[in-house]
Image (cartoon, rainbow, N blue to C red; front, side):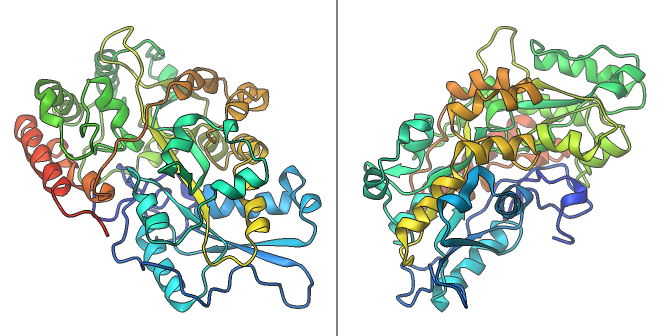
Length: 466
């Protein structure tokens, strides 16, 4: 991964020009990138914060949400306000909501937010994509966001509406600092172009396939001049490839978050890297790794790519973007038939700034963002992934529209927490664990395994972020 990495979850037609997740360039890229935290965020908000102001000419309160431009973030929130999802206006008749966006992803957003704090103009709600608890340093320890615990208790807000893993991940020392807006397993699905598979005379993959089954099938596609499969969204680092690594029994760090553990299962790690290298090099199952291919175009426009890993948001976006395609979604393969499926909890969260002048109104907007209806409508309208709410994951409007969620729900119910990077250098850790050189044929899997371990431990040995 590059030093500022983003997760590409935006179809080409919805992507901001020349500029995260959804935000690769218009040309696209094969690697879906995981967020990088910019250093040097201020230690506390400016005392002259302007959050919670009254719009000119009105007697009401304006709550400002600061986030990124992506369709699943700023885009869906703007649309949800227009649609008045869950009757927000009637519940807060004197509160207007303004969405302010600062770039497409964290490489733009975090430096811009630093300027916002320094200028004394923070909003009321701020977004963050947690990586290995980095958001707790960014928000709570730097005194940027409020402790929500007493506010939620005062409003009798039931945190039991969310999966426990999510609340645990957004808390520190028993205090809740963020609420989830998107909560999902990391890249748990494979999107398959069913029509292209049938045209090629191949059988459809199934949920019980192993990685070996997928590779054998992909080689048959290669014999027909097609690419059978691309890792696409699942990337080539310890975060985006966490389901893949965990299926092989590989963990990046120990429970303390201080020791890199790739070599604790060295043989399995080398086997996993060898598999990925063979997909590109020996077997020609996947597109060449350099230059990074535009896998969205290969899949949906050129239809030369039959299957690719994806984030849950692809379940809504791909059929919406490519209406003529018959796309079927399957669960990520396992190493051996019958193995337990494993993943990791990925989230996008919002917190309330210390600068807000209207914490009650801001909390009502925050709980609206984290509400069931925002989750259900965001999924069914194809804007975003689901939230950490059992009531959303079991809602028939989602399940009827996309049956894959019935199988994903079991995975979500037993979701494993994001691994801890104890010095809060989570994005640096992810960058250090990139193994793209293996896919490019520049390094052997064995040498790459040692290199990843060494670089990962170097990050963990650095001083904690202050």
